[in-house]
Amino acid sequence: MKPPFRHEFLRGVRDGLPILIGVLPFGLVFGTLAIKAGLTPAESQGLSLFVFAGSAQFVAVQMIAAGAAAPAVVATILLINLRHLLYSASVSPYLARLRLRWRLFLAYLLTDEAFAVSAPRWRQADLEHAHAYYMGAGVALWTCWQLSTALGIAFGARIPESLSLAFALPLTFLAMLLPTLIDRPAWSAAIAGGLLSLALRDLPYGLGLILAVVIAVGVGVSVEALGGTKPAEVRDVDD
Image 1 (cartoon, helix red, strand yellow):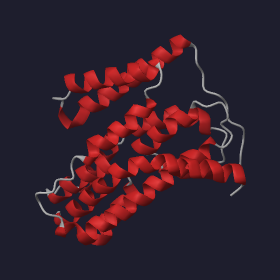
Image 2 (cartoon, helix red, strand yellow):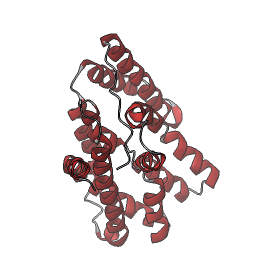
Image 3 (cartoon, helix red, strand yellow):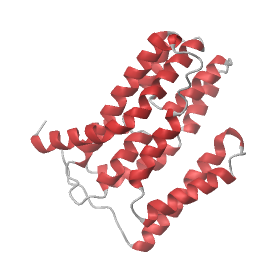
Image 4 (cartoon, helix red, strand yellow):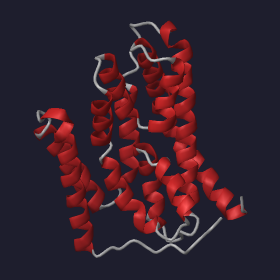
């Protein structure tokens, strides 16, 4: 790695570390549930390796345990992960000049946590090596998720039933959200998303959450457009 690239990469790793406090128990829970649902260790780890999407993995394991057909499981995973289209649309102006191999790799690393950690970095003036920062955060999260899944597979059965690790998920999302609330578009989207998710929570198949996210993003984009802000361009790089 070139020095500026390495510096940004390590910054991304460092800034992603607080999120790992919530990711670690979340991965432990997934590894444990996957084994209890009847998946083999290889299948359980494979979900984390190839799907790499916590909420979708949890739903997939529950559906597999209930005997759901493979097409239904795949379709549900795609539905749950539709929000990643919104994430990718948000970061695409900053990554459009990168080589194809970079965009493919960074697309694989795109998660709720990586997006939230990197969002403040995209707002800075110097974006030449911002993708290295994003990659650092993404690699740190990916590594933690794979290791925590493996630990859950290996030792999850020894975790007492009375010790609930479910608290990790809401804490993780709160830790992701708070650093991004720095301007009116962010606050507008957060407030709209929170209110709408409550109002639409009774819709089937999780559609309420998806609609809330889509509308909230539209609110944030509208507020940003009224403010006249535009994303900066990124030079063509090939580090």
